[in-house]
Image 1 (spheres, helix red, strand yellow):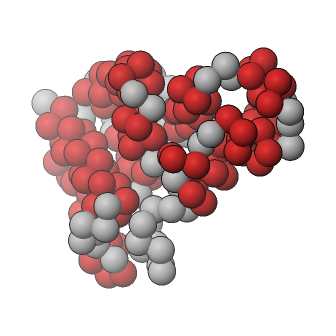
Image 2 (cartoon, rainbow, N blue to C red; image 1 turned 90 degrees about the vertical axis):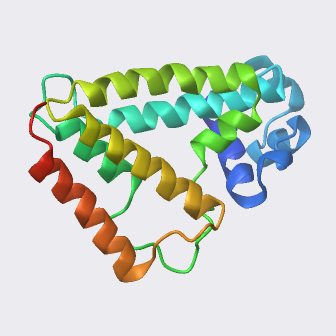
Length: 179
């Protein structure tokens, strides 16, 4: 039932935004009683935190294990974050739950959950066997790409998107030599 509820929260978030995540709306969307919902998630903050943890776990699942070849973690970070092809039509990012914005909207406790996970990811990027500045630049480019896309702040599209992504990928290979 827990996954069924979190699926419902994600659907609401994508469709209607953070304000739509209310206990009654989530119970209705999940097809469960409010009591069943409260058994697993006693508050809206617990629901949002559950989604943040689940999304971070999904992201972790596509990242390579420690000991992977140099640059593998940084490239996986890029691959998991920015698609190779330019997103068409939808510039808002509404096809994905925006993890950072969701965590921020959940309040300081929920944001702390993401910050803790992010600290681990940053450490892994810094120890990826490539120049840590290159890994940081890729991370910051990913963060900027998502911010621009989600807030409609001039995210690159079409050939500009493809070129930017290729530049980042090439930079990991060409400039990523160990520091």
